Image (cartoon, rainbow, N blue to C red; front, side):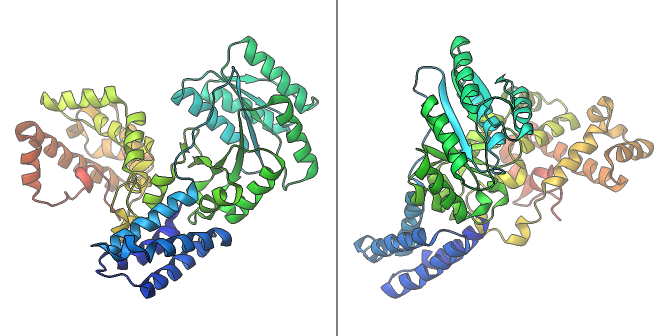
Length: 459
């Protein structure tokens, strides 16, 4: 998300960073470009006007004019106002209630509401250590109940059964009773969606809200609908006391207009972003971190949290001890490293969070392709245990068998083995003389195999 907006804003503010003097004229020129960038990102017009007005007011004040580096200060002002537009800070779910804490999920059909219910259930189970119950009150779409039950089984939480011939109100009340009797802490209620906002739908969900008194009422909306997402959220908020928004399909939205419009138009915070199809692809929304990414400053905090959460610490410790003791680094170890990288969103997902990546030319960024990493994993998986431990035994007939099993050409198996050989040499240098000796040996050059000698060649 935000790729297009980030590119435009970075190009605009980059010219100001080194400015020794800021005038009203060049502030106006800059804001004209910022305004165009926001409108192209499908940000709602009232939000654009308010944003540029606030930036201009601060930019022509003493804060900038008397600064030793006014260009840098102006960039900071743009960042601060981006944060302010999106809500200042992350607003967590309020689960302080007599169990079960009830969360009501609302949204249009096709917004990803049922999937988001499953993702949120997994988030609460794994990151908040909550005992969760899922229930579907969507009696109009027969597949919705089965879909939520499947998701509940996949994430390992309890599911309360319902059927299409029941009333949503009755289903919800029975689910609450079940949760209380069985000591479940959070109840997630998936509701029916429609293709558009209508009175029947609003009446039904208002009744559910009335009988349940949920601690959270979350509106699920597709980020790819741009400012229409904000307008739909407002229509729901006018009919229902929303407490927050889940913005879905953000991995497919290069504009980001919805994220920059929703808070201003509805007054309600974005609490989560859906960042992919997998059930762990739900992230808390941090406006300050998102603003940093938009302006090319990276998001190291999120990257560190992701590493903490997703890297298998036991495996990492065992590998470190293995290298220290001088034991052979083999292809099974290499595969583990690639698997861990993919669990964090792949190389492209990690690079997106690193500061300074906005300065890397687009043609170089486009060469980073996670499909190459998946191909390497497939090749290693096609090997026997003995071949992974002793790659030197992999000769002609073995190479052909491995290539056939992985669905690749023999040349790609050769390339992998060459890259792995380079990585083994690097590991040996680390064993003998530590990192300092390794870096001296590299002399600032990247090995032929890519980053660390182990990454795939970038094409």
